[in-house]
Length: 633
Image 1 (tube, one colour):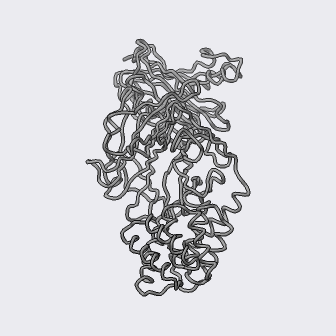
Image 2 (cartoon, helix red, strand yellow):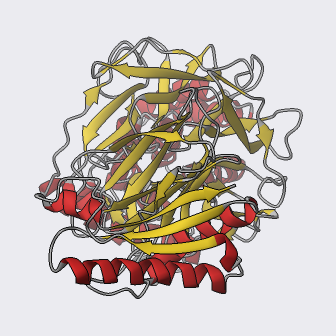
Image 3 (cartoon, rainbow, N blue to C red):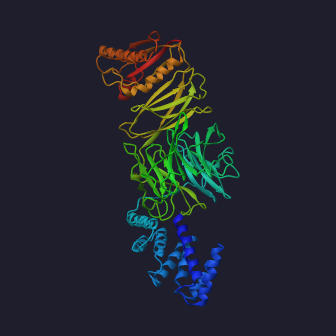
C-alpha cells in the first residue's frame, strides 16, 4: 500500500502547484473557489472536509478535471475504491491525455476492486507515455502481471470451503494469527480487545474447540502488544513478536517463552544479530527447533519487508540470512510459516503475480536446498484484498486463517479449510509419548532425540516434560527415523519409525518405561541394521552405536552382553551362526571405539529367544534384533 500513499502525496504537490499558478481546466469561479478551499483543507489534513468542497466543485463544473482527480485520490485514501474509480474515469473521459499518472493510479485501484480487464487496459495505456520513471514503469508492469494471473485464476477456481472454528475460539472481538500443536490438541491465537493484543489458547475435546482462555500473565502484558506467534510442535516453546517493550532493541522484536508445567516462563528477547534496531517480527520455527524464519525491514534486504532465517548453534543464533530473490521481491513478503516437513514454506507477498495486494504463496525446497519459484494458492483462497497469516496442520490437509469478510462472530474470526492437494506439504505424522520410571511409574524428564538415520542428522532434540513426562515430535514421510530416550542412571530406550515407501495412516503413540541400570536388564537396539543374511553393519546403525558407546562411557563400571537374534525362517544352525556374527560385529565396533573388551561379551541365540509371534511378518521382524544385557555394574 505504500505506493498508494506515494502517488497520493505526489498528487497533492501537483494540484497545489496548479492552485498557485491559477491554471485550471475550469473557468467557473465557484468551482475554482471550492477547489482552492479543498487544497487548503488538505494542507491541514482535513480530508473529509476537502472531499465535501471538491464535491461542490464538480457540482458547479462537471468538466473540472483537477477536481475529479483530487476527489479520486482522496477517496482512494479513504479506501472508497468504487468512488475513486468513478472520478478517475470521469477525468479520463473529459481529456484522455490530461495526466498520465491517472492511468497508473486508476489501474492500481481497479486491481484492488478485481476489475482486472479494465485495469490492464489502463496500465498498458500508462506505459505508452514517454519519460515515465523506471520505478513507476516497473510498478505498472507488476500490476499488469497481476491482471494476467488473476484473469486466468478467476476462471479456474480452487476448492475453498472455509469453516468457522466456533464460539469457543471466536468472539465479538478480533481473533487472528492461529497456530496449532502437531497433534492439533491446542490452538494459540491473538485476540485484540480495546486495541490491546494478547494470546489466548483453546483445547480440542471431542473434535470441538473449547472456550478459549488467557494464555499467561508472564507473556501477555496490559500495556504492550503481543502477536504473530509460532509454537514448537510439542507446544513447549512459544516464539512471538513483542512491540515497544522496555527491553526491546527496535520497534518490534522476537521473544521466546518456555512452557513450565501448566504455565509459561518469562519471555526472553533473542539477542543480536537476530533482534536489531530494525523491525523484526512474525517468527516461524522449524520442526527441529533449530531454524527460525522471520520478517524484517533491516538493511541488506531486497524489498521493504523480507523473509530471513537464522540457525541455532552451540554459540547461539547465527547471523540472519536473507532467503534471496527466490522468495523475496522488491515489494513486501511477510507472514512466513515453515511447515513441520521443514521443506514447504507458506507466506504472503504483494510482489509475486497475484490477484492484488497481498496473496498467499507456497514454495518448496528442491534437492539442492534451493527454494523453488513460489506458487499462488489460487482463487478464491486469494482475492483482490489482503490475505496473510496462514498456518497448516502438521498433517498438511487443513489450514487455519483469519478473515473479516465471512460473516463471523464479529471483526476478524478464525477459520479452517481443506488445502487443495497441489498446495499441500509433504505428508507428516508425529510420535507422541510419555516417559515414566519403570518401577515407580512416575513421569521422568529425559533426553529425547530423533535422528534421520540415512543422513545421521538430528531432527528433534528436547526433554520430556518434567510434570507429565510428555514429548511430541513430527516425522516426515519417506524417511527412516531412530528414537533414543536417555537419562542418567537409567538404561536408554530405542525405537525405530520407518516411513520409507508408506503413507503414515495414524500417529505413533508410545509409553516408555525407563528401567534403572540393574544386572539382568535388557535393551533392544532397534536401530542396528544388517542386510538380509549378512552381518556387515549398515551406515544407518551409526547413530544407535554412538548412543551405546556414550552409555558405556557414562557408566564406566557397567559390563554388557551383546546378543544377536533371528526369526525362525531358514536353517537353525545357520541362523545361530548369523546371529553370533552380528553380535560380534557390534562388539568389534565398540572395541574400535575404545570401549574396553573386558567390559563386553557377545553371543548368538539364533531363533531360540523370540519376543513375538514368528507366524507373522511383523512378529518375525521384531524377533530379528540385536540386544544388550547388563551383566555387571
